[in-house]
Image 1: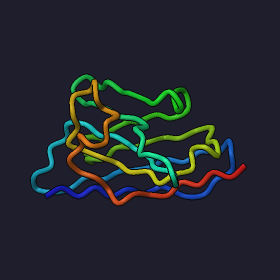
Image 2 (image 1 turned 45 degrees about the horizontal axis):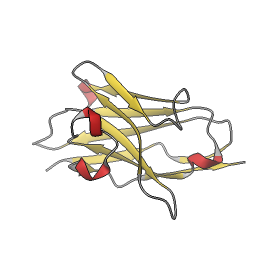
Image 3 (image 1 turned 90 degrees about the vertical axis):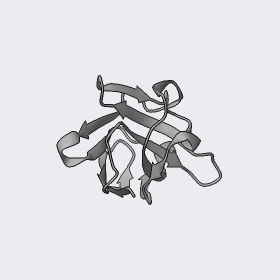
Image 4 (image 1 turned 135 degrees about the vertical axis):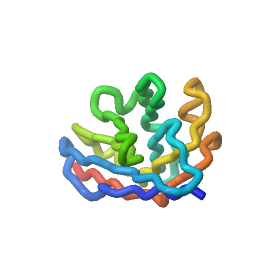
Length: 125
């Protein structure tokens, strides 16, 4: 069993920054990649970013490119999402995911095996 625990969410004004963390644990956990998704009320869950540790390749949704950075600390089994220049449209519940599919389909949430409980991010204008 694998457990993913997110932290770092909160409320900020537009233009502000937050850093989300996702700590993984469990006897069967083997880091192959980490990803972040978000879900806003009335909207479908969307992929935000993913990182694959083999070559450190990262992937981003167009809406967050240049503003968000995903990173990973393998020694701590933790994936981070640094979010800068936040906009009200970034308001959502953010989830981390592991047990990732092929990078070509990193944004397909149905292909991930493990999920955290989510952390709320609220950006006010």
